Amino acid sequence: MKILLTAINAKYIHSNLAVYSLKAAAGQYADGIEIAEFTINNSPDYILEEIYKKKPDVLMFSCYIWNLNVIEEVLREYHKLCPKVPIWLGGPEVSFEVETFLQEHPQVKGIMMGEGEVTFRELCEYYMQDEYYVQKKDESVLENIKGIAYRKEKEYADAVGTIQVNSWREIMSMSDIPFCYDRMEDFSNRIIYYESSRGCPFSCSYCLSSVDKKLRFRNIELVKEELQFFIDQKVPQVKFVDRTFNCHHEHAMAIWQFIKERDNGVTNFHFEISADLINEAELELMSTMRPGLIQLEIGVQSTNEVTIQEIHRTMKLDRLKEIVNKVKSFGNIHQHLDLIAGLPYEDYKTFQKSFDEIYALQPNQLQMGFLKVLKGSYMFEHAKDYGILYHDKPPYEVMATNWLSYDEILKMKRVEEMLEVYYNSGQFEITMKVLKHKYDSAFAMFQKLGDYYEAHGLFGMSHSRIKRCEILMDFVKEEFARREDCAEVCECIRQALVFDLYYRENSKSRPAWAGDSGNFKKLTHFYCKNGKMSHVEPFDYDFLGDLQQFPQKCHKTVWVLYSYDQRDPLNHQAKAEYVHPEADMMGGEWN
Image (cartoon, rainbow, N blue to C red; front, side, top):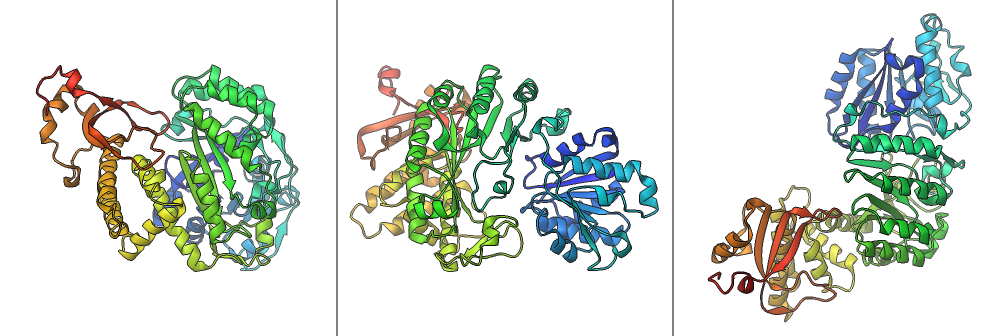
């Protein structure tokens, strides 16, 4: 008897914590369980073929908003080929509205609802130990398994059938969950997902975590033992999936103190936190950590007080800003801030205000997401009250609300894409800092850039980094064409793009707009003695200054040396520093 646990991840680098945790929880039945991982970039035909070749006796899928469409296609075709193989689903995407789902998917035998470790072990027992019941099609055992909904066997082929929904299972102790990462060879070059708690103390209306009111923590000694395992294995990144990691001060401090003391100089730890809950002791500890040891994801969602209140969110915005700025001043922690467009009482103008307030904090990354109306959430239950129109298919993304039209959503989509390309990519850091000074609003800047892309048919195609630079220069020329400072702005932006080009990497091919490097070849040879690991470039502007205003031309040319073997651990930019040819070369010929 073989049970196949199937995960379809968003990217190859991701791993699926759920299927590994289920297998570890199966105990004595684990040898009969195989895991198959794919990505949404694999074709459904490929996934179908690979599953078919494994010849499972029971097929199970881990379901999320990003993979359900693929899973639905695969299971329909697989059922045609192997109609006698029972198909089970689990995960947050199928744990709610189970009767409707089973009615619409006659190929599916059953669904594991909610927390699955104990439920899965009992299903393993049914299929592996109680084969007598399975062979005789006696489902009396299934009736006693909590946390499942299933189609009764006698009407399995019926499109409607008789659906049995058992009671939900009681939540389990976090410390009873077995450690699932004992075979690290399965996770080479992949992100490790880890949880030290389940549940959330908050009740945000758009989030499924608020459904689980019981907040539980794993025994801290167990956590330390498991984190030490990751540290010993020199895992590149461990991503905590705890919904609000720092909601329990002692728990958070114990973990942060431990990873600081045991730091191997390689492993990075990612935490989702509530910034306004951070206290002074935690700040003090953070300030002493190795640059790049931890990174923080902070959900802001909106700065509109009416919206924050309506979505049942608890947040002190002034304190959040204070904490973000304080952590930024340490210079050792990557911060990722989130906003959600499409929330109740958030119109186009108030979202622009939210965007500008958070952009002004200059986080390492600013994610602008769109509301997902998740089954089981408060937002799902009250979507009609808010006039929310959303896609019927996953990821159930908002299309319009009482406060936002579809036209406005489309405009905001253009802002989102420009933000990803020109800010979150880290490839245009200096250029965007400089250009922002020519706009009263960062949101408006990205909106105009997105409108330029739209007007010139530049969306929907792949552009190289060099091409993105050229598009930005053309945009600036058009945008400032009627202004007296057009020539000045265009030249400054051109040089800023050259700065960014080499800030990120030693470009193999030098674009024509970057100018001819032949006139300073001798200087290049003098400073760049380690070949491709360094580069020198002249500028007329002080791009290494504080850039608190649009830069003015320097009195004379300044020279920047980029060292690619010395990168910033937070943004991976090369070390950039001024050099002084006249002094360094002792008056020799260098120009």
